[in-house]
Image (cartoon, rainbow, N blue to C red; front, side, top):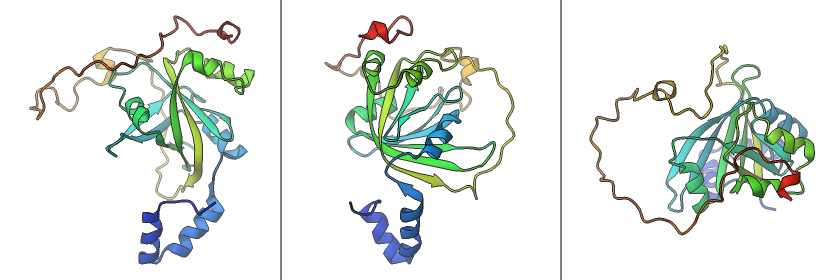
Length: 231
């Protein structure tokens, strides 16, 4: 297997004289899987950032949050996270259907200030598809559907290619305060409203409803299914 990283980054390392330092990072801090400490770290997080790009390379970076452990390290090669009810745009999921490459970033602002990068390839799973995965152990499966009572509409499964530390030196240590969260609410005030005043601003596009895609999502389940009912 060749060294990790892109040809572009390695070319810049040579040009800017950082190749030796970068190689030390690749050899000492980067893995092609999640080791036990990384999986335990993911299980303690309640937020992450998700980076995707469409088929043209246009990028999107978004934020995801949930109860502690809402992202699950299924095993050393797979991570699953839930998609809760949102604004209906589905930007990240849309990108994944065109381009499977994905980057996840977890940051611990409240204790170690260390972060974890997880890069890999993603696929969108409807709930019944996840339930059919025989490799998801029963205790993990129960936890997947026990995220604080919040029911996932669907899941993203990430096959891990790279996992490595985000160093703590520039990450601020924050004091956490309690906040009541209404998961999946459509209440505009609770969502933040039009805080940036974007609604009244002009836009360079006009809205023409796109042609309906022949693809159709699987029907959503009425309630969290049992593993037995999925077989």
